[in-house]
Each structure stands twice: as C-alpha cells, then as structure tokens.
View (spheres, one colour):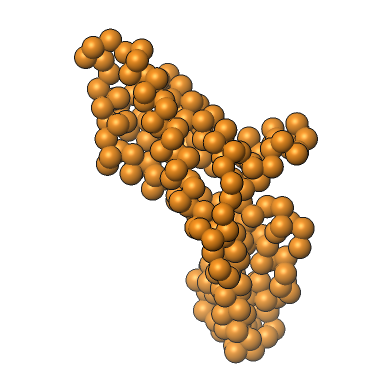
Length: 202
C-alpha cells in the first residue's frame, strides 16, 4: 500500500528531501522536531546547561541530525538504528568540537558531560526510544488499515486495553477463539511490519 511504501519511517523520508515540495519538507521537519526535540532537550538540561544554552544545543544537534539523515545511503541489509547512532554521534562530535574552540580555558562543565561516553549513551537510548515509538505508530497505522475493523478492535481490547477475551468476544459478537486468533494475527503483522520498516528481513 502507498502509505507503507512512502512512510517506512520519518528518517527514511528525509532522504527524499530533494524530491519533495517545500510544504512536505516543512511538515517532515515539524514532525522530526516533535518526535526528537523533547529527548534531546531533556538530555541537554540534564547535562547542566542553562535553558538558553540547552535550547541552542538542541537546535544545533537536530539540524545536524536532519542534514546528515538526508545524505546517508540506506542499506536494507543493516538495522536502521545503527544509522541513528552514527548520525547522532556525528552531530554531537561536531557541536562539541565547535564549542570547545569558542570556550575559554576552564569553561562550562557541561561540555565535559557532553563529551562523556555515559552521557552520549544516555542520549542514544533516548533517541532510539523515540524512534521505536514512531516506528510502532507507523506500523499500527499500516496494520490497522489492512485488517477488518472487528479484528483490530479485538486485538486492541485484549492486547492494548487489557480487557478479558470473554468481554471482547461479547462486545464484538464473535467467538473467544476468534478474539485470540485476531490478537495473534495482528501481533504477528505488527512484528513483521516493524521488521520491514527497520530494513530487517521480514
């Protein structure tokens, strides 16, 4: 389906920036900022940066992240999250090097934390969590559009809302076996879709 082919993930869409309209590019940037800026900003604050500095660093990292994401070549034989880490590491390294050249001796202690491996790994984890959340949301949209409404609703009630299978069966007017079959099938479809989105073998 077209939605699946053209929206494998936000970051994959960014690679096509040169071929999209200005309106679409602006929409992708807005979505990119919505998904990732809270995580980068929270991390910057945790590094001890003042609010204005934290926002400057966040903006700089996101811009570098955005630009790098549009230039790398996607390799479907590798997991996409490895690209996330490469892009983010490059962004942080570039920002840190630029700030060091501008800082007087004995400058901000936040820079030392920005350079530290534990701090970098913490941000990597936050970015990957944001990526996983976005990826799952895309997979949900894709699978939901491909199954019958009662199949999705059965999965939603049992797997997402935690309701007993018997309650879902009664509400939907289907058998208990059908409820559990719906849950299994949708879970399998979600797993396969996420794998496809990441470029892993389905």
